[in-house]
Figure 1 (cartoon, rainbow, N blue to C red):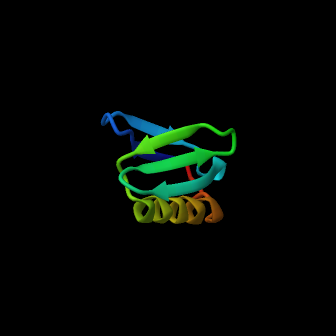
Figure 2 (cartoon, rainbow, N blue to C red):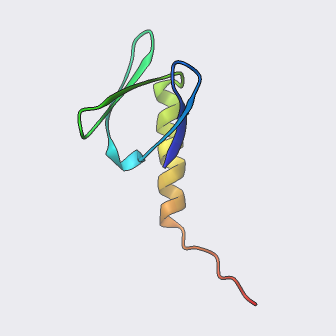
Figure 3 (cartoon, rainbow, N blue to C red):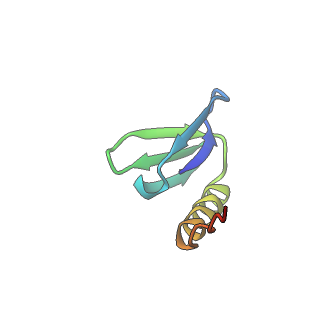
Length: 67
């Protein structure tokens, strides 16, 4: 999951695996697999970096908690 900022400055957390396309013209529009479109303040480059970081975290095993 990644947290972005809608165009009206409210935060939105979306499932990075559901992103189909990211388009940047005047605003950045994310199209999800469902067809839903979300306009956000972040640039396409920032969104790509966030998705890469998210996926790297998913690949790393969780730390062991010792009691």
